[in-house]
Amino acid sequence: MSCNIPPILQVGHVLLSADILTEYFCCDLDKCQGQCCVEGDAGAPVTLEEIDSMEACLDKVWPHLSASAQAVVDKQGVAYPDTDGDMVTSIVAGRDCVFTCYEGGMCLCALEKAFRKGDITFCKPVSCALYPIREKVFADGTVGLNYHRWHVCRDAVEKGRQLGIRVYRFLREPLIRRFGEEWYEELLEVADGFEV
Image 1 (cartoon, rainbow, N blue to C red):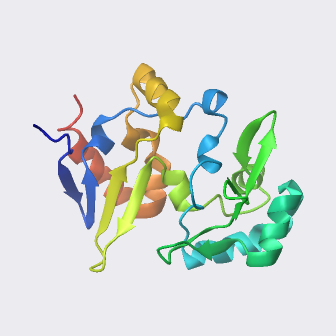
Image 2: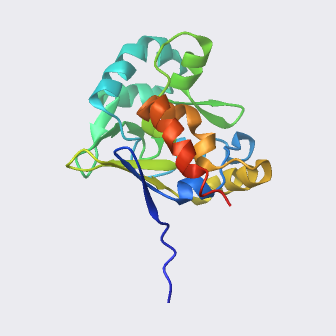
């Protein structure tokens, strides 16, 4: 009986599963309709700095939030501690992130929408931008990155395969945002030996 656990690689202080380098991924919003902002049992992980940034953006994004989301934000703020005590974005009725907004049936991020229009300087939490990579910070400061497989992203896997885009290439900008350009260049060197 064999286990299909991908090998673990190290780039700087970051440990990552090799499937981040070998698997394909490219979001296909036309098919998934932004379900990653709706499905799940908790909001997106956020840092205290990101909470401050989201609060600073509220005036600009407020008109784009649903009345239910506005009520949640009024009651508990933009974030809350989950069952593990980690801060996550507030959610509406156990589903939608409070920052979701809908256009033509498609779920979008009100923060990212305002950022792309130039109304705010904060795009969205890095945990959202990094998806399907999930991050874990260990007590010694080491960071672990895993590729998260989720049925709502099966179309993204197929599109990535068709276009030949690996997870780490699709997430180039958020990985640089999180770890820096130098770290990403080192990741590219490591990836050269893993692409098959």
